[in-house]
Image 1: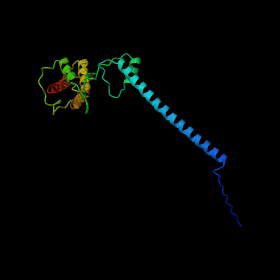
Image 2 (image 1 turned 90 degrees about the vertical axis):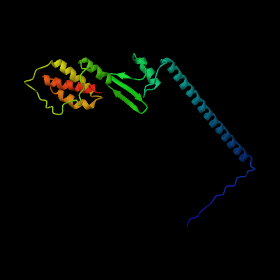
Image 3 (image 1 turned 45 degrees about the horizontal axis):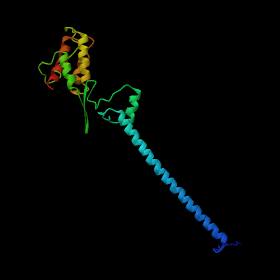
Image 4 (image 1 turned 90 degrees about the horizontal axis):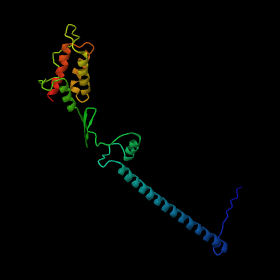
Length: 206
């Protein structure tokens, strides 16, 4: 047999002790609310101070940079200042020419061009006034070692091939012809040099 007992507690609100406890609890709640409010104000003030310090730092960073400074893509001003502290460098504006590559930066993309390098290459090998060729290599050209052919200066031939190989970075249309001529750098003949010069004639039309 289970006996269930229930206990009923009745608070006498007229009891002075009860009233004192209720008043004490109310005071504690008010104090806790004041502490929370003070903490929120302190956090807001700290955030405002941090924002002001950040703005002040950015202004100081701007004052250290040249007036014509243009922020490079992907680099913040703080990174630029840090790099200037470690290395001897100067900000010369947006990149336009680097390693014989002409660079054009637009909103919808970055474009590379080697037209100046191409002209310098033609001038170097005295081909700036040559006749144009429609294709970089003859359609019926069957190049081989040409053992019986007339030898040419291998240093000059290799220089031409190396220059043309660098040009393939922006001119994939000449890559096959250049790589074909590059196979005979060890012992170049007149026929090989003639084929390489045809590639220069093809460049003239552009």
